[in-house]
Length: 323
Image (tube, rainbow, N blue to C red; front, side, top):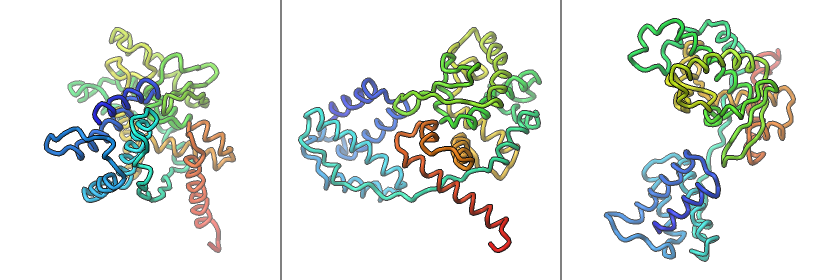
C-alpha cells in the first residue's frame, strides 16, 4: 500500500499540479489511514484486502475520536480519490470507498458584513485612522516596540493594498500571496490568478484597489532595496523582502478589524464572501460570480444566494412597518 500511496502523491504533484497545501492535506489524511491499518509497526497492508466494511470501521473510529464531520468528509474524500487512482492504474479492480457514504454536513450560510460596514472599514484605513494598528505587524519582535513612523507608514500602505484587493477581487488568501509581478496589470486593472488545481483565471479590480496598489508600489521598491531583492517576483512582501505568507495576511486582517470594531469576527475569507454577496445583491449574474471566484461548480457559488436572501430579510424586518 505504501508504494501506491507515494505514487498517488507524485501523481497529484506532477500531473494534477496540486498546491503544496493540498498535497500536505492529502499526505496527512492518507498517512493517518495507513497508520490505522498498521498498528504497532505491523505489515504494510495489502490493498486488495481493504473493503468497504474496513473503511466504515475507520469512519466510525474517526467519529469516536470526536472529529468534526467536515474533517471526516475530507479524509474520506482523500481515501476515495486514492482508490479511484488505484483502479485507473490497474492496481485494483474496484474502488471499495464507492460504497461508503460521506457524512452529511450542515449547510452553513456565510455571515457577511454589509457593503456599508466594509466601505466604512476600508475608508477609515485609507484616511489613516487605523494607522496605529500597523505598529503590531510582521516586523521582527525586536523592532515592534515603538516602531518608527516611516516603518508604520510603509506597512500601512502595504496592508491597505492587501485589504482593498481581497475585497475588490474576491481572492482566496493563497491566491493573493501567490501573485507575481507578471500577474498584475496595473494599467488595465486586471489580475491573473492561479486558483485551486493551479487553474488560471482573469479577475478585475476597481479604482480604489488600484490606487492602494499604486500607493504601495514605492513601499515594495523600498523593501526590495533594503533586503537586496530577496523575492523580487512576489507582489506582496514582508519586512525582510520575502513573499508574504497566508498566516501573515490573516494576522494583518485580524489586526485592523479588531481596531475598527472589536466585535467583528472577520478573516481574509470574509472579504471574499462579502465580494460575492455584494455583487449578487447588486444584480450580478451568478455564472459571472462563479467565474470571478474560480468555483468549479455553480452549486458552490449558490450558497451566496442564501446569504443575499438572508440579508434582504433582515432589511425587511427592520424597515417594514408590518414586519
